[in-house]
Image (cartoon, rainbow over all chains, first blue to last red; front, side, top):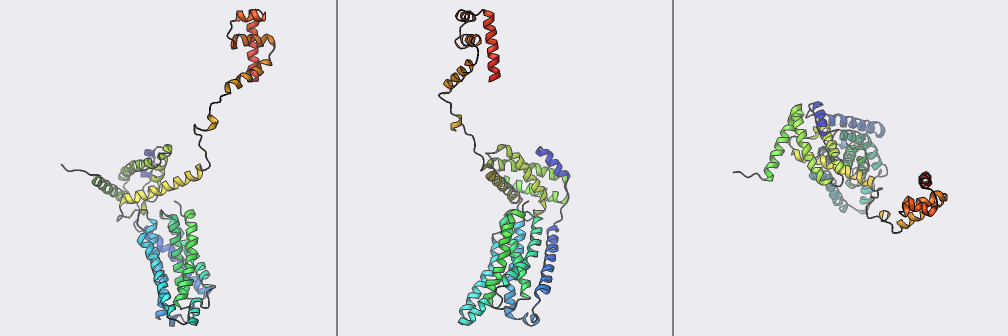
Length: 213
Length: 186
C-alpha cells in the first residue's frame, strides 16, 4: 500500500483523544488491584490485631514509609516510561532512593544494637514466609499494571516491566504491613525488599514479551 | 537579511508539527493529514540513513511507524517536545526491525561473487569435451561421423561425404537424427 493511501486512511479514521483517558485508566485498574490486595490481606493473611495501637507509632510509620514512597515514585516512573521520549533518569533514581535510605537506617540501627538483638532484628519470626507472601500479593497488582501499560507505549520494555514489578511489590508491601508482626527496620530492609524484588524480576522477564506495541 | 540556521528551522518544524498534532488530537482530520505527510518525510530520511542495507524495507518501516504514531497518539503530552516523541517511537520500531534482521539473517549466508562455488573451472572445457565424446559414442556411425565432421571439425557436407562415403542427403539426415537423439539424452 502506498504511504499516501495510508495517510488518507488514518486521517479518515481520526477520533479525538481525551487528555484524561490515561489517568482514568490508571485509577480504574490500580483501584481493582488494590481491592484484590486488600481482600487477600484481610481474608488470607488476616490483619494484625494490634493495628490500631501500632499505627501511630514511629516504628510502624517508618516501616510503612518505605513501600509508600517507592509506590508513589514508581507510579510516576511508570507514567514517564509509558510515554515515548520522556526522560526517566530521575524517576528511576527516585524509585530506588527510599530503599537506599532504609538500608542506611538499618545499618545504623544494627550497629547500635547488641549481638542477640541484631540476630532477632535481621531474622525476626517470619523471614521464611515474608518475601513470598509479598510476592504473592503483588501478583494481581502486577497483572493490573501490565494491562495498564498495554494502553501506553513504553519504549524500554524490560525497564517498564521491571518498574511495574517494583511498583506492584511496593504496594503489596504496604498491604502486607497491615498483617506482618515484624517491626525491626533491618528486617524490613532485607525481607520486604527481597519480596519486592521478586515481582520486579518477573516483570523484567515478561516485559519484552508482553508489552510490545 | 536574517540567517536561518539549522537550529531555527528545526524549531519551526517542531512548533508547526506540535500545533498540528494538538489540533489533530481534538479531531481535525485535514490538519492531521498534513501532519502525517510531513512526519512521513521526516521518518523517510531518518530510516534511509539507518537502513541503508535494506532499502526495500524503508517505506515499509515508515508506514509501520506512522501507524504506531496514529495508534499511540494519546501518549503525546503537550508539555513534551514533539520531535522527541516522534523519534522515540521511530527508534523503538527501528530497534525492533534490527532485532528481526539479526535473528532472521543470522541463518543466511550471502552468496558473494568471491565464493569458490562461482570460480571458473580450469578443466571445464576438457570436461565438456569428454562428455560430448561419451555421448557421441552412443550414436551409430552414420550419424556420429557426419556430426563430428560438420559440427566439430568445421568441414563442409561435401568434404564429410568424401570421408564417410555417404550421400549428401544421407549425411544431412544422419546429422539431423543424431542431434535429435542427443537432445533426448541430454
